[in-house]
Figure 1 (cartoon, rainbow over the protein chains, first blue to last red):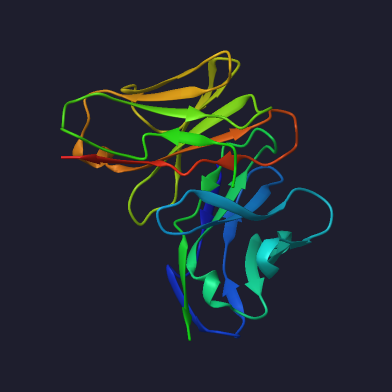
Figure 2 (figure 1 turned 90 degrees about the horizontal axis):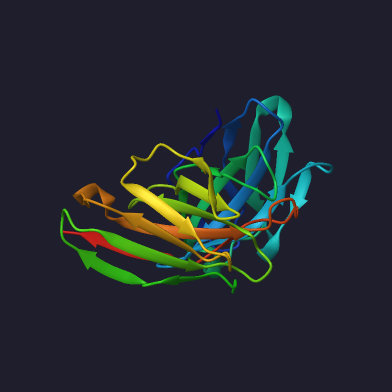
Length: 114
Length: 113
Protein backbone atom coordinates (compact mmCIF):
# COMPACT_ATOMS: atom_id res chain seq x y z
CA UNK A 1 0.00 0.00 0.00
CA UNK A 2 1.12 3.50 -0.73
CA UNK A 3 0.78 6.61 1.37
CA UNK A 4 1.87 10.22 1.32
CA UNK A 5 2.48 12.56 4.22
CA UNK A 6 2.68 16.29 3.71
CA UNK A 7 4.10 18.05 6.74
CA UNK A 8 2.45 21.40 7.33
CA UNK A 9 -1.09 21.97 6.15
CA UNK A 10 -0.36 25.70 5.90
CA UNK A 11 2.90 27.38 4.96
CA UNK A 12 3.45 31.13 4.74
CA UNK A 13 6.50 32.73 3.15
CA UNK A 14 7.39 36.27 2.20
CA UNK A 15 7.50 37.27 -1.43
CA UNK A 16 11.01 36.57 -2.70
CA UNK A 17 11.78 34.03 0.02
CA UNK A 18 12.52 30.33 -0.40
CA UNK A 19 9.53 28.02 -0.70
CA UNK A 20 9.90 24.54 0.84
CA UNK A 21 6.97 22.14 0.91
CA UNK A 22 7.61 18.76 2.45
CA UNK A 23 6.47 15.38 1.22
CA UNK A 24 7.30 11.91 2.50
CA UNK A 25 5.97 8.75 0.93
CA UNK A 26 5.79 5.04 1.50
CA UNK A 27 5.61 2.52 -1.30
CA UNK A 28 6.31 -1.17 -1.63
CA UNK A 29 7.69 -0.69 -5.14
CA UNK A 30 9.87 1.98 -6.73
CA UNK A 31 7.55 4.96 -6.73
CA UNK A 32 6.52 7.46 -9.30
CA UNK A 33 6.12 10.83 -7.58
CA UNK A 34 4.22 13.93 -8.53
CA UNK A 35 3.51 17.43 -7.33
CA UNK A 36 0.26 19.08 -8.36
CA UNK A 37 -0.99 22.61 -7.78
CA UNK A 38 -4.62 23.58 -7.33
CA UNK A 39 -5.89 27.13 -7.57
CA UNK A 40 -9.26 28.02 -6.01
CA UNK A 41 -12.22 26.36 -7.69
CA UNK A 42 -10.02 24.65 -10.23
CA UNK A 43 -8.71 21.18 -11.01
CA UNK A 44 -5.17 19.94 -10.56
CA UNK A 45 -2.23 21.04 -12.66
CA UNK A 46 0.95 18.99 -12.78
CA UNK A 47 4.02 20.90 -11.57
CA UNK A 48 6.59 18.15 -11.96
CA UNK A 49 7.11 14.41 -11.80
CA UNK A 50 9.77 11.88 -10.94
CA UNK A 51 9.78 8.62 -12.85
CA UNK A 52 13.32 7.31 -13.20
CA UNK A 53 16.77 8.76 -13.75
CA UNK A 54 17.89 12.11 -12.42
CA UNK A 55 16.71 12.62 -8.87
CA UNK A 56 16.50 16.41 -9.14
CA UNK A 57 13.44 17.23 -11.17
CA UNK A 58 12.62 20.64 -12.59
CA UNK A 59 9.06 21.67 -13.24
CA UNK A 60 7.02 24.61 -14.34
CA UNK A 61 6.97 28.06 -12.75
CA UNK A 62 10.49 27.67 -11.32
CA UNK A 63 9.66 24.77 -9.01
CA UNK A 64 11.89 21.76 -8.50
CA UNK A 65 11.93 18.67 -6.30
CA UNK A 66 14.52 16.12 -5.28
CA UNK A 67 13.80 12.42 -4.89
CA UNK A 68 15.70 11.04 -1.90
CA UNK A 69 15.15 7.32 -1.64
CA UNK A 70 17.04 6.96 1.66
CA UNK A 71 14.76 9.55 3.25
CA UNK A 72 11.63 8.52 1.31
CA UNK A 73 11.14 12.20 0.56
CA UNK A 74 10.21 14.35 -2.42
CA UNK A 75 10.24 17.92 -1.13
CA UNK A 76 9.19 20.78 -3.40
CA UNK A 77 11.23 23.98 -3.53
CA UNK A 78 11.32 27.30 -5.30
CA UNK A 79 14.16 29.77 -4.68
CA UNK A 80 12.05 32.92 -4.76
CA UNK A 81 8.32 33.02 -4.04
CA UNK A 82 5.96 35.04 -6.16
CA UNK A 83 2.48 36.23 -5.26
CA UNK A 84 1.05 34.03 -8.00
CA UNK A 85 2.39 30.92 -6.20
CA UNK A 86 -0.36 31.18 -3.58
CA UNK A 87 -2.34 27.96 -3.99
CA UNK A 88 -2.85 24.45 -2.62
CA UNK A 89 -0.10 21.96 -3.37
CA UNK A 90 -0.51 18.20 -3.41
CA UNK A 91 2.14 15.51 -3.43
CA UNK A 92 1.11 12.18 -4.96
CA UNK A 93 2.58 8.71 -5.46
CA UNK A 94 1.81 5.98 -7.94
CA UNK A 95 3.07 2.49 -8.65
CA UNK A 96 2.64 2.98 -12.38
CA UNK A 97 3.30 5.72 -14.86
CA UNK A 98 0.92 6.29 -17.70
CA UNK A 99 -1.73 4.33 -15.86
CA UNK A 100 -1.70 6.11 -12.57
CA UNK A 101 -3.92 5.42 -9.68
CA UNK A 102 -2.65 8.26 -7.63
CA UNK A 103 -2.47 8.39 -3.87
CA UNK A 104 -2.46 12.00 -2.70
CA UNK A 105 -1.36 13.71 0.45
CA UNK A 106 -3.71 16.01 2.32
CA UNK A 107 -2.21 19.11 0.75
CA UNK A 108 -0.33 22.22 1.83
CA UNK A 109 -1.84 25.65 1.43
CA UNK A 110 0.85 28.14 0.49
CA UNK A 111 0.32 31.79 1.40
CA UNK A 112 2.65 34.49 0.10
CA UNK A 113 3.15 37.53 2.30
CA UNK A 114 3.70 40.77 0.36
CA UNK B 1 -5.47 24.25 -20.07
CA UNK B 2 -6.10 20.55 -20.54
CA UNK B 3 -8.56 18.95 -22.94
CA UNK B 4 -10.44 17.21 -20.13
CA UNK B 5 -13.91 18.65 -19.64
CA UNK B 6 -16.39 17.85 -16.90
CA UNK B 7 -20.07 18.63 -16.59
CA UNK B 8 -21.85 20.06 -14.82
CA UNK B 9 -19.52 22.39 -12.94
CA UNK B 10 -21.80 22.65 -9.93
CA UNK B 11 -24.94 20.92 -8.76
CA UNK B 12 -27.04 20.54 -5.67
CA UNK B 13 -28.85 17.33 -4.81
CA UNK B 14 -31.00 16.11 -1.97
CA UNK B 15 -29.99 13.23 0.28
CA UNK B 16 -31.20 9.93 -1.16
CA UNK B 17 -31.20 11.14 -4.77
CA UNK B 18 -29.02 9.85 -7.58
CA UNK B 19 -26.51 11.87 -9.60
CA UNK B 20 -24.56 11.42 -12.83
CA UNK B 21 -21.37 13.31 -13.54
CA UNK B 22 -19.74 13.38 -16.95
CA UNK B 23 -16.18 13.56 -18.20
CA UNK B 24 -14.82 14.00 -21.70
CA UNK B 25 -11.25 12.77 -21.88
CA UNK B 26 -8.35 14.40 -23.63
CA UNK B 27 -7.93 13.49 -27.29
CA UNK B 28 -5.77 10.38 -27.66
CA UNK B 29 -6.29 9.22 -24.08
CA UNK B 30 -7.92 5.86 -23.38
CA UNK B 31 -8.07 5.73 -19.59
CA UNK B 32 -10.25 7.71 -17.22
CA UNK B 33 -9.89 7.89 -13.45
CA UNK B 34 -12.27 9.50 -10.98
CA UNK B 35 -11.33 11.11 -7.69
CA UNK B 36 -13.32 12.56 -4.79
CA UNK B 37 -11.90 15.60 -3.04
CA UNK B 38 -13.66 16.50 0.18
CA UNK B 39 -13.23 20.02 1.52
CA UNK B 40 -9.75 20.51 2.90
CA UNK B 41 -8.57 17.07 1.83
CA UNK B 42 -6.52 15.58 -0.94
CA UNK B 43 -8.22 13.76 -3.80
CA UNK B 44 -9.09 10.12 -3.16
CA UNK B 45 -9.12 7.54 -5.95
CA UNK B 46 -12.60 6.19 -6.66
CA UNK B 47 -12.04 3.98 -9.71
CA UNK B 48 -10.47 3.82 -13.14
CA UNK B 49 -11.86 2.77 -16.50
CA UNK B 50 -9.90 1.34 -19.42
CA UNK B 51 -11.46 -0.09 -22.58
CA UNK B 52 -14.91 0.36 -21.08
CA UNK B 53 -14.15 -1.83 -18.06
CA UNK B 54 -13.39 -0.97 -14.46
CA UNK B 55 -9.67 -1.31 -13.89
CA UNK B 56 -9.15 -0.79 -10.21
CA UNK B 57 -11.25 0.67 -7.43
CA UNK B 58 -10.54 2.57 -4.26
CA UNK B 59 -12.31 2.25 -0.94
CA UNK B 60 -15.73 3.40 -2.09
CA UNK B 61 -19.05 1.56 -1.71
CA UNK B 62 -20.91 -0.03 -4.65
CA UNK B 63 -23.34 2.88 -4.86
CA UNK B 64 -20.48 4.62 -6.66
CA UNK B 65 -20.44 3.23 -10.17
CA UNK B 66 -19.18 4.27 -13.54
CA UNK B 67 -19.19 3.79 -17.27
CA UNK B 68 -16.74 4.38 -20.06
CA UNK B 69 -17.97 4.79 -23.61
CA UNK B 70 -16.31 3.78 -26.92
CA UNK B 71 -15.11 7.38 -27.38
CA UNK B 72 -13.41 7.05 -23.95
CA UNK B 73 -15.67 9.56 -22.26
CA UNK B 74 -16.95 8.49 -18.87
CA UNK B 75 -19.72 8.86 -16.32
CA UNK B 76 -19.68 8.63 -12.56
CA UNK B 77 -22.96 7.64 -10.97
CA UNK B 78 -23.72 7.90 -7.28
CA UNK B 79 -26.91 6.39 -5.87
CA UNK B 80 -28.59 7.07 -2.54
CA UNK B 81 -26.66 10.26 -1.96
CA UNK B 82 -25.43 10.99 1.55
CA UNK B 83 -24.39 14.31 3.04
CA UNK B 84 -20.77 13.11 3.13
CA UNK B 85 -20.81 12.73 -0.64
CA UNK B 86 -20.56 16.51 -0.88
CA UNK B 87 -17.20 17.10 -2.55
CA UNK B 88 -15.34 18.12 -5.67
CA UNK B 89 -15.29 15.23 -8.11
CA UNK B 90 -12.29 15.19 -10.42
CA UNK B 91 -11.83 13.27 -13.61
CA UNK B 92 -8.37 12.51 -14.98
CA UNK B 93 -7.55 11.07 -18.37
CA UNK B 94 -4.37 9.32 -19.40
CA UNK B 95 -2.93 7.07 -22.08
CA UNK B 96 -2.27 3.60 -20.75
CA UNK B 97 1.27 2.59 -21.60
CA UNK B 98 1.93 6.01 -23.03
CA UNK B 99 4.23 7.10 -20.22
CA UNK B 100 2.68 10.51 -20.00
CA UNK B 101 1.01 11.97 -16.97
CA UNK B 102 -2.70 12.14 -16.33
CA UNK B 103 -4.53 15.39 -17.04
CA UNK B 104 -7.28 16.58 -14.74
CA UNK B 105 -10.50 18.35 -15.51
CA UNK B 106 -11.81 21.33 -13.56
CA UNK B 107 -14.07 19.15 -11.47
CA UNK B 108 -17.73 19.02 -10.54
CA UNK B 109 -18.70 20.51 -7.19
CA UNK B 110 -21.49 18.37 -5.71
CA UNK B 111 -23.44 19.59 -2.71
CA UNK B 112 -25.84 17.21 -0.99
CA UNK B 113 -28.41 18.82 1.26
